[in-house]
Length: 131
Picture 1 (cartoon, one colour):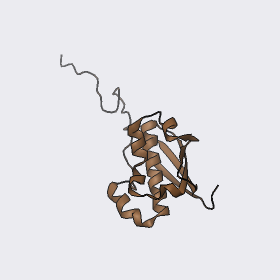
Picture 2 (cartoon, helix red, strand yellow):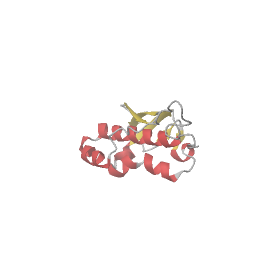
Picture 3 (cartoon, one colour):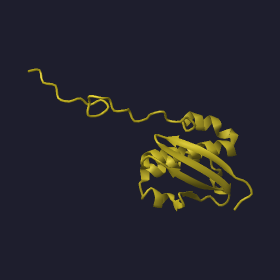
Picture 4 (spheres, one colour):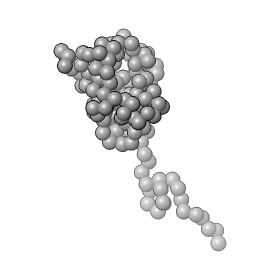
């Protein structure tokens, strides 16, 4: 284990990711698994998770340990991306403008719309019969 530790949170939909960073050799573990193991080879989700590291190249000096829970795999990938971006900001203040430009520091506010009474789903309606 390294000398210091930061803990930051990332959120997306109902998923919450806690990111811990230590000095190391650049490994990223999500719930004690590698990215390939955790996201089951879904390349799209791995790209989402690794977005903050496309901006910042200092990943080789640190190990990232992510604990994520809640939601589905897509929401969890977004939460991990948000948490990693906030961690990168703590490690390197100079990357703030680039991270902000990419929209990685903003929490995505979109949530599932609630179901309304008298309808089968949030917006869907039962078939209308005129006669």
